[in-house]
Image 1 (cartoon, rainbow, N blue to C red):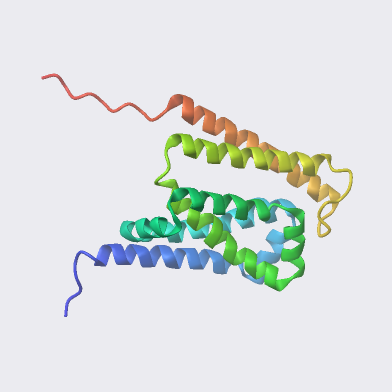
Image 2 (tube, one colour):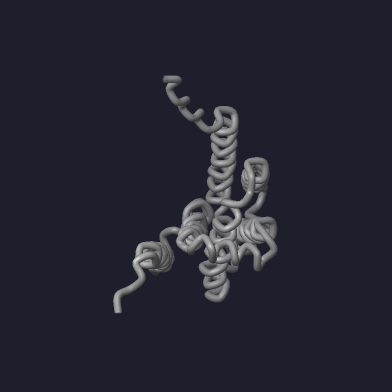
Length: 204
């Protein structure tokens, strides 16, 4: 029996994206790479964690549109998905969560599963169904949270994370504030310029 032609290209795309997401998670879980990323507070929070969330985003975007629609309907629409992603990402920015991930293997496993499933995948499912105003709200809320937490890391007179030195905490705070400012400028420029206007057809 020959396979249905209409399903083959999309099925291949889904498999490729799923394998890509799993390969990225497996790569980040390699002991040497994981140890290198988690040795610095900056790379732990601003490189490893976003890449784990990106793996979930890639996997969710590989789902068929009908399946993505059913998932959104099952959870009640895009708003619950956005809230789940915001709360989950906020938790993993806390110093206590970082300490737990480095000291407890179960917390590390929770990080490797929750960031793809509760941050990346929900955002990917919700993003295509929210308007520009809602996207701007989510983006500015995330950037403001990043900036405030980064400033607290810079201004704190003592270590807030037992697993990292105060100098590493200060460096991470600088990176967080810098990324928040750069992200806000990029969002503002994109909002002011807007999408390019479509070319008008010739009058002839």
